[in-house]
Amino acid sequence: MSNSARHWQDPVNLILGILSLISPWVLSYSTVGRATDNAVLLGILIGIFAIAAMVNLRAWKEWVNVILGAWLFISPWALGFAGAAAAAAWSAWVLGAIVFILALWELGSDRSIGGWWSHAPTQ
Image 1: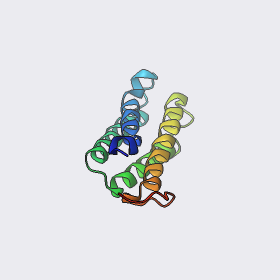
Image 2: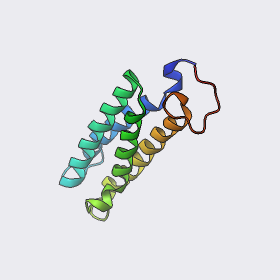
Image 3: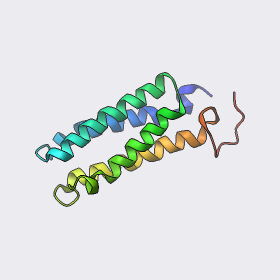
């Protein structure tokens, strides 16, 4: 199986990073400082590590996106904008959960970087 077909999660995480980056303006919460800063910074970082994994797959790059996805998910509570900016909070929860799940999925399904639930032989 080709590398791009096996690792479709990284391009999707890149798209999710871009969505996080632009979400303050698309969802009209750019005036909420912490939420905007968080979405922009996390969007850039998720995108960088998704690109890095597409160029040269390593488990640690996927683990970084697991952590970034988890932070994005909990950030509305941790940074205190869960009640103040519903659009920002929902964006963080949805995008964070998907990034987290996709990075774990790749870690769990590719034996070359872990693959704890894959029974396919390594190539």
